[in-house]
Length: 223
Ligand SMILES: C[S@@+](CC[C@H](N)C(=O)[O-])C[C@H]1O[C@@H](n2cnc3c(N)ncnc32)[C@H](O)[C@@H]1O
Image 1: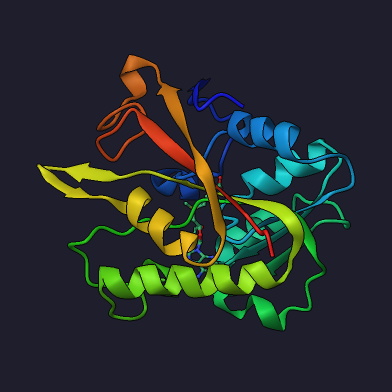
Image 2: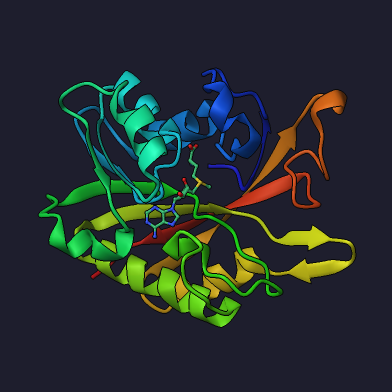
C-alpha cells in the first residue's frame, strides 16, 4: 500500500439534522480502501468508536461481518436501526469490551474522539469525568490492551487520527497515540491521507483541526 494516498472528503450517507453539528465521520472511501487491502469476505471487523457507523455500514456492504461499540445512546440507536441482524453493535464504553463476550476479530478500524493537551475532560468517558491529556492517553492504551485480547494473531489494527492545531496551539495527538499503542501492539508504520475538500466546505484545513491530512496508524498483533 502506498504511504501517501489522496482521497475525496465526501460522505455518501446523509445524517439526520440533529447530528449535523457534530458530523465527525470519516468518509466511506477511507473504510473501503482499508477493507479491500486488509480483509476478505466473511471477516469480522470491529470499530470500537463506532460513531455514526461508517465502518459498520461499509463492512456490511462489502460482505464482512461488522461489530461496533458506541458510547452515546442516540448515535447507537441511529446506527443499530440501519444494520442487518448479522451486525452487532453495543451501546457501551469500549473499556468494558472484555465483558461483552465478543468473538475473535480479523481486523479493527477506528477513530477515537480527539482531545487536546489543553482540555480537562476526558472525552472517552463521554465528558463525564475530569481528566488530563495524560489520563486520556492512558485510557486509550487501556482500551486497546483489551481490544488486543480479542484480535486474531497476525491481524491488523488501524487508528485514524490527526494532530491538532488551533490558534498556534498544537497537540501532537497522532504521534502521542502512536507511541502509546506501540507499547502494546507492533507498529507497522503510518499511511498519510491527503484529503481533498471543496473550497467552500473547508473549515480549518481540508481535514479540519488545522490540517489537510490525517494519519492511519497501522498496528499488528504479532503475539
Ligand atoms: C470520531 S467519532 C467516530 C466516527 C466514526 N468513525 C464515523 O465515521 O461515524 C468517535 C466516537 O467514539 C465514541 N466514543 C468516545 N469514547 C468512547 C468509548 N470510551 N467507548 C465507546 N465509544 C466511544 C464517541 O461517542 C464518538 O461517536
